[in-house]
Image 1 (cartoon, rainbow, N blue to C red):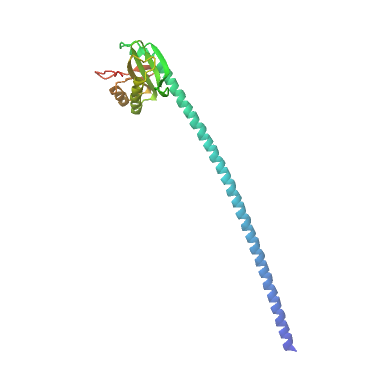
Image 2: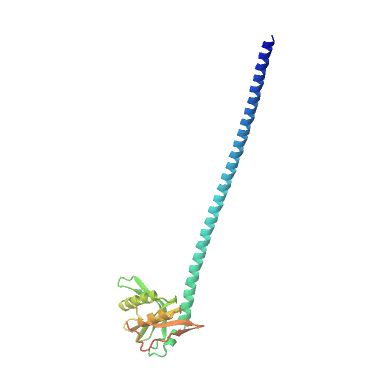
Amino acid sequence: MAERTATFEQAWAMIREVAEEQKKTDLQLRENERYLKEMSQAAEIRFREAEIRSREADKRLEETAKLVKRVTKNLGGLGRSMGDLIETLIAARLWEKFSAYPYNLQRAYRRVLIYDDKNQAITDIDILLSNTDWAMAVEVKRELNTDDVDRHVKRMALISSYPPGEVKGKKLLGSMAGGVAAPDVQEYAQNAGFFVLALKGESVALLPPPEGFSPKIW
């Protein structure tokens, strides 16, 4: 009888032990489930935050692109306005700058288009000075460089080949004018046979040509 009681007690102890282990397992499963849920929620929060940051970054990028576009447009407009202003300053009584020469270029025109034989505009003259015998094509830039000089040489050839009415039958001279003309660019232009003018203070000055300078006649 005692041996049966011991076996029963042992069995009962084993049942309680198994039940306790099951409780621990259930508790561990609930802990694991809670942990996984928290991890999932945290991951979802981080994903949403990343998504929000991405949208904000895209918005900032879009705003930056719009700002760059506006600034570029404004700078372009400013550049054109500055160019127009320099051209206006240089054009005012420009013929007086050549009073030491026998040209008497008292007629002045701006933005004269040059057309080819097919009536297609191929170039233009910023400022055209003329009288009955002489004409001068003046190219105006904010800051002269050697490429501008080379382009004006080609332009002069086109004007000579397709002269507008105010140039036809006249001796054609060329001139470069700018808000700024570095000494090396001035020399380069004068070697090409151009007069060179630049802003000096609040007025326009004909820069001194080198000794023996002879303007080219196209």
